[in-house]
Structure formats: C-alpha cells, structure tokens
Image 1 (cartoon, one colour):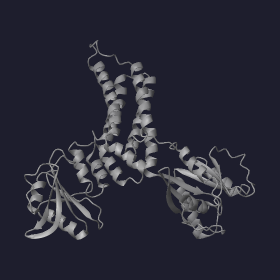
Image 2 (cartoon, helix red, strand yellow):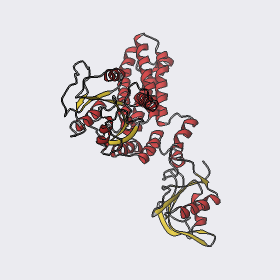
Image 3 (spheres, rainbow, N blue to C red):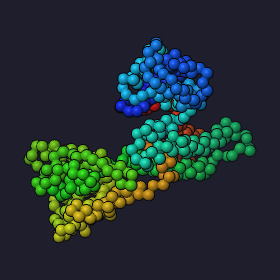
Image 4 (tube, one colour):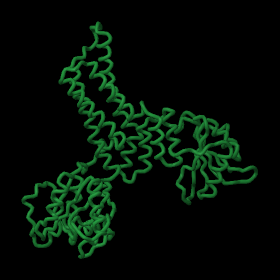
Length: 450
C-alpha cells in the first residue's frame, strides 16, 4: 500500500460534476505537478480553485480538495479533483494522473485501505457497499447503522464476554492454586453458555429478517392454468406486465417483476401453470416453475373460489406443503364452490383481481408471515450479510455442542476449545481474523472509486 491510487469516483455518465480521487503518500505532490496553483502549503480539508494543466495546456477548470493523513477516509493523504462532468474531460485528468505515477485503483480499494489501515472494521466496510447499493429507505438506514459501527459494537461486546470466560478457564487450568480467582465449574459455565446462546440466537433471527429487507422477499405465484396468477401479478405491481387471456397455458415462461410493501422489496415470480401437458414448450415452462419453487422464500398458491378443488390443486397443495405458504382464494366475487375444510392452513386470504378485494390483506399477510410488519430502528441495527449469517450459524451449532458437552460432564478444557472457536468466528465477522482471499473477494464486489 505504498503506491498512489487514482480513480473516477462518480458514475460514468454525463453530468455537471465529476470527481477524480487520489490516495496514498505523495498524492498531494502528484496533483500539485498538474495544478496551476501550489497545494503543498494548503491546510488539510481545504478546497482550492485552479486549472489542471498538461504542460502549458489548460485541461479543465477545477476545484481541488486536500485531505491530509491521518484524518481521511483511507488514513492516507487524499486529493479529490472536482472537474466538469463528461467522459473526455474526466478521462483526460485520470490519464494525466496515471502518466505521472499513480496506479488505477481496483474496485473498492479506497475502502480496503481504510480497513487495512484500521480506520474501519470489516463490518463497517461491508456496510459502505450496502449503503451505496441501497434501494429503499429501510436498507439505507440499515447500512448506515453498519457504517456508524453499531453492529460492530454488538459483536465486540459479545466477543468480550466470551474472552472473559476463556480467561477464567485458562487461570483455573494453569493456576489452580489461585484461590481468589473464580472457580469455573460446569454449572457456572452453563449459565454463561445460556446467555451466549440467547444473544447469538437473537442476532441470528433479526439478521435473517434484515437479509430479507436488504435483498427483498422472493415470492412465487403458483396454481393451475387460468387460475388468475398473471392477473394477480399485474394488480400487485400496478402494471400490465403479464399477458392475460382465457386460454389455458398462456404463461409459458417465468415472468419476473417487483414492487414494495412498506418499503420492503417484493421480488415476484409468475410461473406457468403446473400440470401434465403434451405441449413441449409448456413442459419447459412447467419445469421452470418447479425450479422457482425451490428458490423462493414464499409461495402464494392461487385457487379458484368458484371451482371445486381439482386433482391439480390437490397436487399443488401437497407439493408446496413444506414451503412458507399463503393460499389466495381468487374470484371470491363469483359463486363459491371450493371446499377448503380439509386444507390445514392458517394463512388463507380471500379476494379477486376484478374489484381488487383482498389484495391489501394479501400484502399485510406477506409481512406478517415474515414478522417484519413493524420495523423499529433497533431491528435495523443487525446484520444483513450472507457471509456473516453463515458464520453465526456455525457459532450457534458450536454453542449447542458446548451445551451437550456440559450435560455430559466433559472436562472444561475440552469445552474451552469450542468456546475459543466461537470467539475466533466472531472475530472473522468484524475482521479481527481474516484471510487474504476473503478480503480480496469482498472488495472486488465494490464499485470503482470507493
């Protein structure tokens, strides 16, 4: 990290202003060579008007911001050149910087340097990426909590509590003659494990919900042909996206769209009617529908109120019984013929797409099923990253193993091994322990210039 990096930090579109960012020891001297006025005597966090020059040629009229280490984003000297927007001008300034000794920054390299230089931890770094890509007000708030270090504090405090127990175990094993030290027994250890287990489960549960908030809830519409799935999709997204006809098998492919419920993104998949058919193209659509069934978070099974349950309906009820599911009884504006007394299902909504009766109830039911109908600021102070949730699951499994070991009266030094592994895994979350491969992979997902 001894070299100077440079990159265009603004989006590659035509606009009023573009920003070219430079970071590294010597970056102020580098930009000074290209600037019409000296930057060497400027105070930190100041901005100077002038021109970027190529020999005696004016390239652009700019404002140059100087930020001196260590009070900068990367904890290195940073210079930001605010130039006129447009590809030619911005690219020319970047070209001059590269010709004079800078290197083109890799995706996320500015944030990577902030992490490696100790300004932020790994959780905060990942939250920066989430903040940039946030699509709703909820995801913005959630990411901002991460950038502000609230998530890191939760993990660090839990890790600190575990470290204290580990320290007491070590003293008990290595220095049993210290009579003033707390004697760690299985009973005392069990009390702490119950507390740790509760904390990890709480973080894990809320983190799963936050992952849904971040990525959106994947919802699949299923049902026999001509049951009204496409009409339901069109009404939910308030757009005529899916083709609707009275001909069975009109939907041959999966139609994807999205909409929001209380700022929660719902990724909707309208599938081909699942039935046996000799039509080769429709068979492909049915196959794709079954693939969607495996990957969605929620199934909305659509049944017709004005028809008795068909064999296809019964097959779909059986096929989706182990999925998180809502049954939508469609066409309730017509004579009721369906008999649902034998359907064991608590999440049933009645409605129709003609008068739009029941659609608000369906939206409320989606939030209720995932327990995210009422989001508080406290709920948003949790993790929303698949990598982190995977680590927390490992911690949860280890906690259960420790619980079993205590009940089996295994020696405390054996239990200590699993507890230390949990401590290490929590360290991976905030970046106290990490592999070079993990860091490189994570920052490659960032945008250029950040």
